[in-house]
Image 1 (cartoon, rainbow, N blue to C red):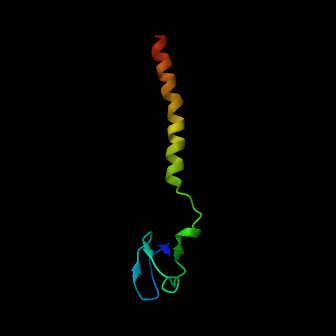
Image 2: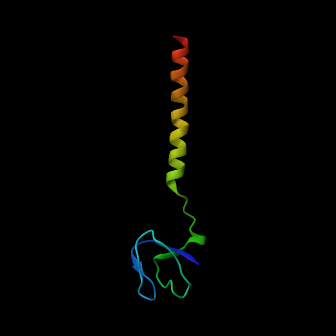
Image 3: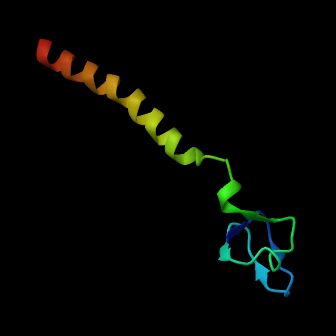
Length: 72
């Protein structure tokens, strides 16, 4: 099963995982409260939604500039 380290931690065997690092581990090995299974991680990536909203906001401004230039 694929896990992601929520913060710096170690697994049952003492291997270190940095925050955000992903690894394939068995449930017995992933004996840490900070190793989160990726299949149950419901958090969407906020970076994608922010860039989409920025593009939507920028589009009307570009359209206004074009109409002002066409009218001159």
